[in-house]
Length: 130
Image 1: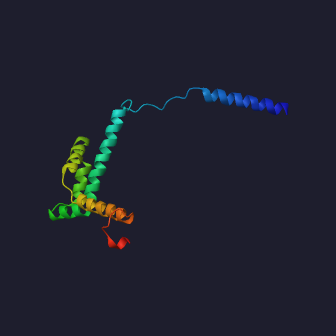
Image 2: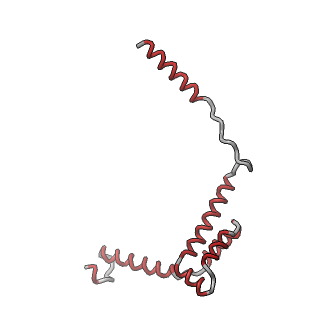
Image 3: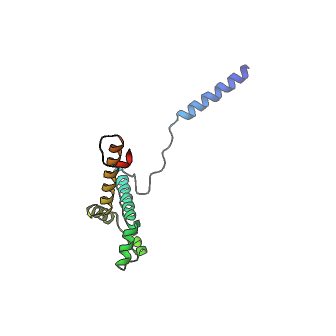
């Protein structure tokens, strides 16, 4: 038993000593350290591209592209070829463009709000809630 205790003690001491030694950091990338600003810029660029792809994936947008004689696959290829600055500029312009979907969303929200208030008895709009 004494021999087992001595062996376990030495093993525990060796493990604690090795565990407390400093660990060498991973080698730095070829271009040097990646700053927080670089990481945020890359993340923003990826987000801008995803927003552009989400708009282009909508069926009404695809129909308009085809109606204008533009191949949607060619548009996707051109979006992939955009620089980060161009993608950011295009994503910003998408926010400024009018969208018909927001009207439908607003009408649906009003309907749901009125329905909930009618169910709670605060309004008397829909007779089918009684």
